[in-house]
Length: 186
Image (spheres, rainbow, N blue to C red):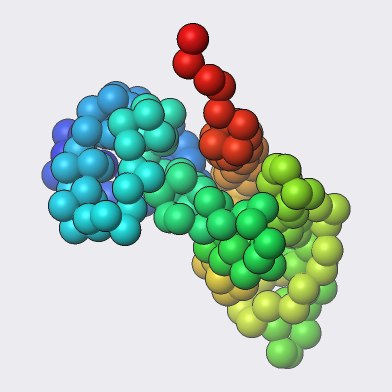
């Protein structure tokens, strides 16, 4: 879909893949993206994903963060008395940046900010360190997905990922608040 929307022949072209995973803007028309996403996913998802409305997709970005927080149903399970599992899935599935702070023969230690839920909104916690399998040098920035080392990141890529994550968290929190406190027509 991104290749078609950007006029790119190769859907696995590096620029597209990087933009999808990190949340970099490709200049894709968001309304057209929403229309195509609904056309592709809607018939396949059926009633299971009735939350995929034009209103939701109007603010959606053609990137992984939007799919994690907007398209997948997990954020809608928060605040319903079973927060641990949805929060774990959201935090694991999002692309998380981290800094390698230790290394030995068994892997690396990465400092990163985990997703938090305070009962009303999502945020990022203080950095914590976790052990991850993989190879990277101390001081290197890395990307994590499902607690696996995915890639090494430049500082610019970290900035892009952080900015897109914060944008998506803000949009998700606005949506969750509106869903829990709908404004009466009138």
